[in-house]
Image 1 (cartoon, rainbow, N blue to C red):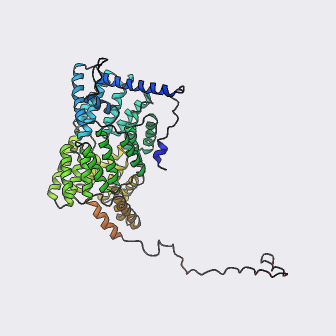
Image 2: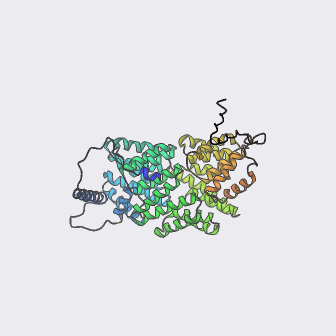
Image 3: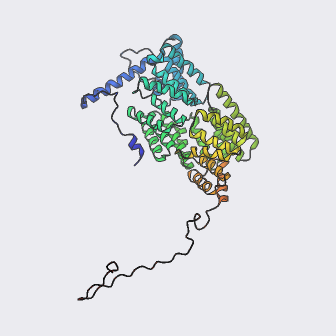
Length: 508
C-alpha cells in the first residue's frame, strides 16, 4: 500500500480544536457558500477597493495572481505582471497598507521563481519588511512573516526560514501556510523527520496543490518514488490553471528523469511547455532529457534558450559539461565562466549557490577550494546535497577516508540519486573496497544510466573494470572439505501379523 494513502488520512484535530455540532446537508451547503463568499470578498479587498454590489465581473488578472500567490501556487506571467503593477501603484498612494505590502512582496518572490532573477529578492525583502513595520510580527502579520520565510528558503538560508516558520506556528498553529515554509526549511537543514511531521500537519489543515507538491517532495527525499509520483499526479488533479498544470508536468518530468526514464521525462517537459510556453524550468528539464537521449545539439539549443529566460548557475554548469562531452571545450569554458558571474550576482542579492560552486570547483577548478567552501556550507546546512558535494570534493582532493563519511550521509538518508551513488562508488574504489564500489556503480546504473554526459560513461567504464565477484562467493563461505552424505538410521521394518515389534534403540 502506498504511504500516500497513510499520510493523507484525516486525523483527529489536536487540542486546539473545539467540538462542533453535526452539520446537516443543508447546513454544509450554507457553510460552503459562506466560506466562498468570505474568500472572494477578502481577495477583492486586498487587491483593490471594494466593488459595488451590482458588479459581477469575474476576477481580473491581478486578482487571479493574488489568489495563486496566496495559496502558494504558480501564477501566470501576464497575471503576475498585472498584479505587480496594481500593487506598486496602490502602495505608492497607501503606504500604510500592510496587507498590500505583503501581497507585493509575495508577488516579487513569484516573479523571482519564474525568471530566476535574483534581483527580485531585495525588492521582496523591502516590501515584506515594510509590511512588518506597519504591522509588526507580534501583532499577527502572518502573511508578511510567511513571506519572509519563503524568501529565506528561496535564498537557501534555511536557518532563517525555520525561525520565521516556527514563529508563525507558535502564534497561529492552525495557519496552514506556515507548514510549507517549515517543510522546505527542515529539509534544507537535513532534518527530514521534522519535515515529515510538518507535512503531516499541513495535510491535516489543508488539501490542495501546495500540500500535494510538498508531499511529493518529502516522499522523494525519503526514497519513496512511487509515492512521490502519485502525490504529484494528485497535484495535477488539484491544479486549476494552465500555469499550475504546467508546473506539475515539469515536476513529474524531473521525477521521471531521476529514475532513468529520459523518454518519459521528455514527453512530460514538452507537455509543460505546450501548457505554459513561458516556463524556463521545463526548458531546462527538456534539455536534460535530450542530453540523456543522445540528442546533444537539440539539448544545447534548449539550454541556451532556458538560460536566456532564466540565468541559473546550475544550468550553466550542465551546459558546460554537455559541451565538454561533445568535444567543444572552448565553449564549455565560456559557460563555466558565466557560472561564476551568475553566482556572484546572486550572492550580492543574498542567494546561496555554494553547492553548485563547490561541485564546479571539485570537477573543473580547485578541489581544495571546493573543500573549504563546502566545509563552511556543511556547518550551516547538513542536507544530503551538501553531504554529497562535500564527499566528492574531498575525494577529488585526495582524502577518500574523510570523503566516505560524507558519501554515506548522502546515500543512506533515503534519496535515490545516480550521481550520489557514483560519487560514493568512486570513493570506495579509491579506498580499495571493490565489492562496495561495484555495488554502488551498479546502483548508479540501475537508477539512471545516463545521469551525466561526462560522468555516466565513466561510471560504466569503472563498473566494467571493477569486474565481477570471484567464483565461489565471498571468502570462508565454502567448506574446507568436500561434503559427505551422513549415514542416517534405517527405519524399523513393519512387523508381520502376529509378531512383536522390534524394540526401538531408545528402549535398549
